[in-house]
Image (cartoon, rainbow, N blue to C red; front, side):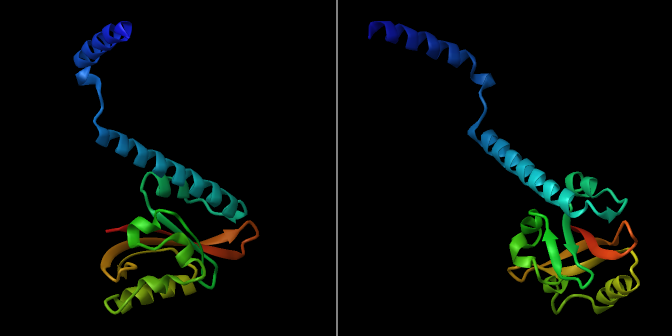
Length: 170
């Protein structure tokens, strides 16, 4: 036992001198959050890669997602949501599986500008890109300004197959 006491004292002195090199507990929490974020990005990108393999779409969704940290929502031509990135929960409180099968109207409410909604509807009907700032509603019914960049997506034969929207809080 006496051998361990000397070792413990030596190591205690060593670590005392190293106090500037220790990381606070909080930094490990940040590291853990960062790792989780990277894993969800990776999962989302793998799903997006599968969904977009037949697309004739030149916009860089990878950059929008990773650098701009936009939420990505993909709908069928009838506007039923078929995909929402996992970071949607941070934007509006909904989990991706809660929005699948719904339409983006689920995010609108009494305070949403009808003129802006009509602008989006016209762009969708005309199959043209659009960019709007609109008042949306979170799951808890609080409001947030949302910048939406939407694009029609065609397959390699020129048939409309999806719409994709990149969304961020304003």
